Image 1 (cartoon, rainbow, N blue to C red):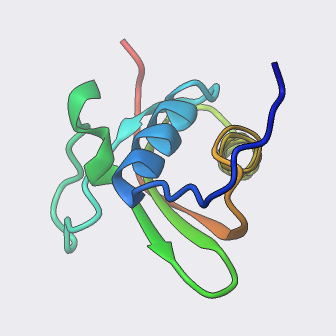
Image 2 (image 1 turned 180 degrees about the horizontal axis):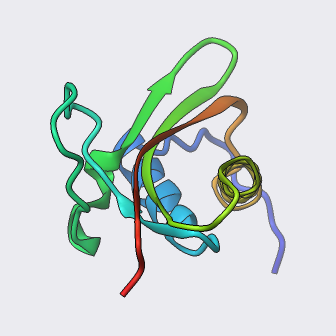
Amino acid sequence: MSSNIPGDLHVANDVLADMVGNAALECYGVVGMTAADTDGAMAKILPAHRLRRGVVVESTEAGVHVDLYVVIEYGTNILTVSQNLIDQVSFALTEYAHVPLAGVEVHVQDIKVRR
C-alpha cells in the first residue's frame, strides 16, 4: 500500500520537539531534560510530560535546527553522550518526520547521579 498522494505535509515544531525529547530520553547517559531558559539558575529536571520545554526547534531555510538542554548522568563521557544525542535526534527527524536537518546542538545544563 504505497500510493503517493499529491500535496504537502507540514509538521508543527511542537510535534518535532516531542519527537526530539522522546528520542533524547532513550539515549544512554541522559537523566532528563531541563528548561532552556534557566539563565544561570539551578537546572531542574522536567517531568516526562514537559519535555518540550527542554527542546528548542527553529525552522530555517536550510532545514530544522534543534537545541537540546539536557542533564546527563555522573560518570558518563560528556562528548560520547552528546554525540549519541545528536545521532539519535538526527535519525528520528530524518527517518520518521522526513524533515531536512540544519543542525543539532546539545547544551549540558547539569550532571546528576541517577537514582
